[in-house]
Image (cartoon, rainbow, N blue to C red):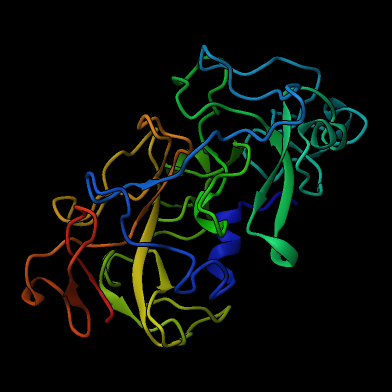
Amino acid sequence: MRVALTSVLVLMVGVGCSAGSTAPPVDGGSGSDVVVGGSDARTDGGTDASRTDGGTVDAGPSRAGLTCTMDSECGAVLTCDTEVPGGFCFAECTDNPSQVREREQCGGAGSTCLTYGDGADAISGCTRVCSPTARTGTPGACRAGQVCTGWWFTHETYDPDVVGCDLFCTADSQCNGMPCNLRLGFCGEAVDMTARADGEPCDPTVETGTPARNRQCRGICYQIGDLDTQGQCGSHINLAVTPRCPDDPTHLAPDQALDDAGERLDNLGECLFKTCATNADCTAPLTCIPGTGGAPAICGYL
């Protein structure tokens, strides 16, 4: 079954959520953008099928990430996951520096092996290459219920993998009768608005419910401080659909992956770090930590 990587993140407490996995603003500009250099597409001698100058992607024979009703519609190496609304042509794959090798695993041109995380804990699956700057309904754009992402914040360098379309709902209508979790982009469980808002402190070690997991936050309880018990609440948003953070957008702006020219490299944003002027603007035990390089102060752990 094709599983949205956002739902994997929720169930795997601590994966990609250590103190080294999400950084305060480093760009010295708006204070909310994590700037990543270079391109979102790895190269292998100039044969990459990824973003083009026109903001679209190369067409090709692969059906990865496209709609389907049965396996025969997905080609020789892919199967149809009918549990995804509209169907999803999919196969497991292995991350590779060469896009040629990834396309071989995923049925041909126009596909990529999208990877969440690094090393032995990485999770990879075949999907369609996309462009974060493509407008809805144009070549390179993902269909409704998906996001164009390279899971930048799950990688040690904060650089996105070659971006592809992954499952990420933004409305209940995309979930086959189930509620959409608007903070995490997966179907099956509505947001608990009585839980703590983004930017508030939480304890990542506390698990409740069945299955047991951290339920203190409307989104995810990220481990941020040096101690296992030091966390902050955060949400994911599809920046192509929802450009503003859902909680206190005046003080919370989405962290995102940008190139040196300020162009978006990935459409997943994180709403996590709250700006502040004094300690009174933060919920204890968070304190107001001065920014560096022109970045504003944010609430965090000393």
